[in-house]
Image (spheres, rainbow, N blue to C red):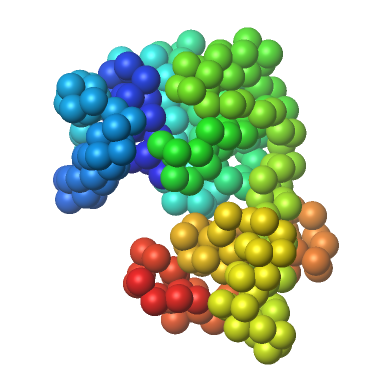
Length: 269
């Protein structure tokens, strides 16, 4: 997600600094951006000159201090509230006090992240959809103390990226995952109970409900560990058993079958 967000900003003409904890991760991210841009060029949606210019606007670093002079920050680390809060506390001490800190979280409370800083009025959710270069929706999440000005700035920035901002309240899972994850979870229950094979379930949802991708294929694409993390946020946040993660999902994550990124989920890759 981070590399896709970086690409979207760079394609829109912004100078981007992509920060991660190690050079190999940054090298992989840059290769991913190059591959994505090459696909756009191959489909005549981007010129070779624009591809080169986009890459020229993208720099990388392994130290958070490299973000000291940035004008806007989007966080896209692991979906873990403690890790995100620690990062927001660090960012708060590094970047200028007037700068907005946005999170690409798919489920975690923006209010909690804002409370880890001295600028909760300038903390908001900016939940991009995956793959970022292709998907136009961005959920804009307002924390308890997020200011109107910050939301206007974030939404205007989305439009500069060619995206469509849609505001959501700060409830667990926001809009997208509050609706999507119970569907994915139910599809996994259907596999576990022998209602249908993954192929059958995905085919029913594609041909019967006109979904472009079946829920189990989508779960593999998102990452089964990410799906589990979001369901746990929903279950804890609402206290409702309808959000309880399917035991099969838990077993697959425990076995390291995480989907596309591990080479095996409900399908082999």
